[in-house]
Image (cartoon, rainbow, N blue to C red; front, side):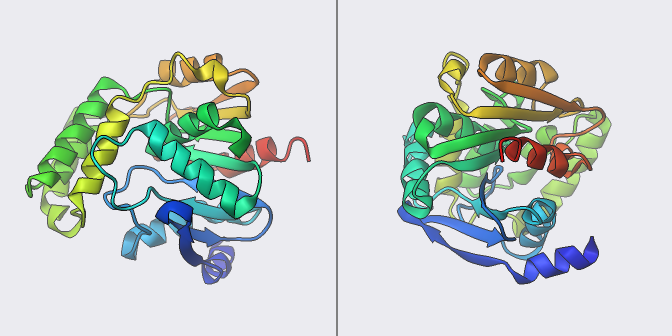
Length: 273
């Protein structure tokens, strides 16, 4: 696997889609659009974050040309998740000319659901991982505290600890470590961060899951600190032609690093090929 990871990393390219959506692309094969999780900046990651993203996507890049796409910089307050989905639909249409497989993780899953509901012609098959039809209340509050503090120039990263871990004791330790690390992880444009958090804060697709026509796979972990299993199940139950996979013992980000994740995604995407 280390050899494969090194080979795939050499193939990494980056660019910008229509509407200014930054992306990294790696691997070969038919396209798979990966909508990024919550990120402090609407940009391609650098340093450790870049390394971590490439490492996470490498197993999928052995099967597909993976496009890791982020939201556009310069997002204005008042932008809605529907607005962001419309931007992505136009960008994907311009780049690929037709429906494409889409994988959304965490906040990227919120966007992927909105995209599939509003622009069904943009999505061939849909994978939602560590995400659901709406944010849990504690995740909403954590994100809002983080984005508000960052916009005010204060230390903010520790507010995300309740999403990162579920254990109260480990949560306090994680929050302390995040507080120390904050100066090296602050958003370069906190206004972007706040605008996206405000959009996701009111995101709730519970009444529109039936509008999603793409075949859908929902994946979650039963130890996810951001979403409960009931939310994963409600999301899958509401989407026609969908199925649910729960990984025992997997955390919020642990689900996408699970040994079964890439094989399960590939089997689902290739089922009609």
